[in-house]
Amino acid sequence: MNFTDELIAQSLANQNGCSSGKISDINNEVRLYPLAQKYNKDKVVLMPINPTHSFVYWEVTEQTLKNLNIDLGNIHLSFKLFDENHQEIMEFDSIFSIGDYYISHKSKFKALYIKLFIQINNELKFILQSNIIGVLQNTIKSSSSNQLLNGCIDGDLIYNSSLLGVQK
Image 1: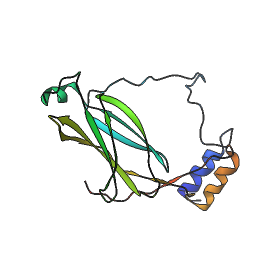
Image 2: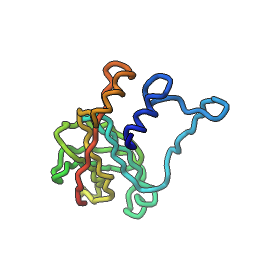
Image 3: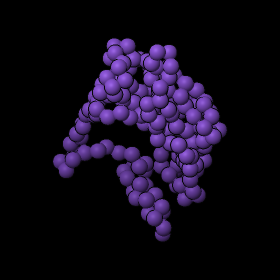
Image 4: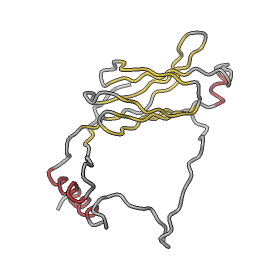
């Protein structure tokens, strides 16, 4: 049995046959761990959801905005989504220094990343670049993964992700 088969077997050993479950402490009590509203760190993160949707969240700190002489009440951010060939796919704007956005895109791309700009005097100034994600594909990862489909809710899909080495 290889490492992947062991993981699949362990996930199938769960009560409901799927790898998802409740997170509980030693007393079987579910605990909530609230996320911080901000981390005071300049960051833009891109995450794949499925083959045609991704999620991005960002934070541009007050200190960065002050360093750029940007009024905290008059922020204009511009986000540009790029593919593995560094071709711009789409763009969207925000007036919030902290936020998130769901992106719809075609599944034909192999990798995606975002560049974040801020508008200063009608010009875009580059601020941050996100991580690079491999776009999820509509394929099963391995033949032994077919076992996972049998115990899960009908209609669930398991996606395989592959990432190209895209240079910044």
